[in-house]
Image 1 (cartoon, rainbow, N blue to C red):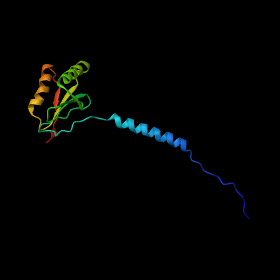
Image 2: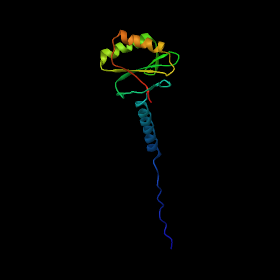
Image 3: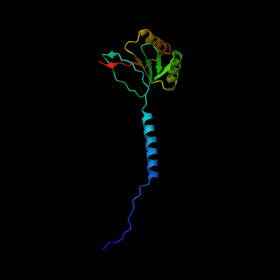
Image 4: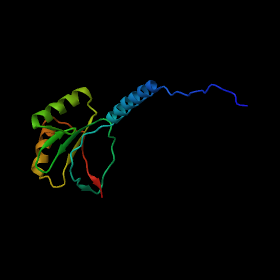
Length: 132
């Protein structure tokens, strides 16, 4: 004897899944932008007596082989570097300046930036090198 039982249908609410997927997408996009750091592709010079310093509070000045100057990964001229160093000193005098130059950069280009730092009497400067 067969009984006619009503069949139960299990339905997955798809509208809630699209909301969860959208929120997950937003979360991933925000997290990926938090640790974004602009870098200039250079070959680091090697140093024998390298000292590790904190990378949290610093201003990075990059110099590539052709002598182009970058502030925190963005192209800049020497007047912009001078203004950025002045502003950095006014807002947080203990900020360290990291000078990052390519191994093949002529010293003439590095010296232009050093003259600005010397003129402004900025004393917390680090030359970034690769461990030997």
